[in-house]
Image (cartoon, rainbow, N blue to C red):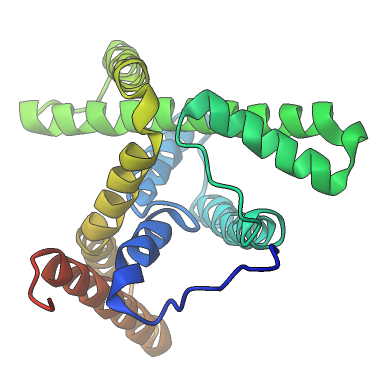
Length: 240
């Protein structure tokens, strides 16, 4: 850390926006529950995946996401936090800054390795989002039209739509990376109570939850809704 660095206290309403944005994507956006459901449904049809196999796949994905979130948080704390280096808000410049920071910490020998890992993370995330949101949009369209099931053409169309929309956003908002990310992350958190309630209602309808899991689910919903309402109230200036 820089010698003159003074850490800001997170225990005030001024940092609420950042905390909400951080929780919106850590360890993953809650709308991914719908996407993983779409993938599981496709696996059942293609590979006859059983309930226990689907549950194992979900639990492994959730656990790995949570562990990776802690790793990313730790990397930010030990590499960038308090360094006095201003974060670049332009996509290309930020990637270059990210690679330089980790190279300076690990060693010059790791430059190509860090660049490769960063690329693979972004490439994998891009494929995941394109396919996942494409399938979710196709399912929404199927429900609106009252059709029995989605077909490959619909998935291909909505996946192409998601990729095209992403390219448009990247093209026209190149210099607004920070604002764009903040909007996406905050939107994810504010909408999280809705997805949480839908998940809870669906699971409770088809499976009897234990008393402990039921209490944990309700506590999670209260936490998500409480923070979302607190953020919206602060955004509306009710605490100023």
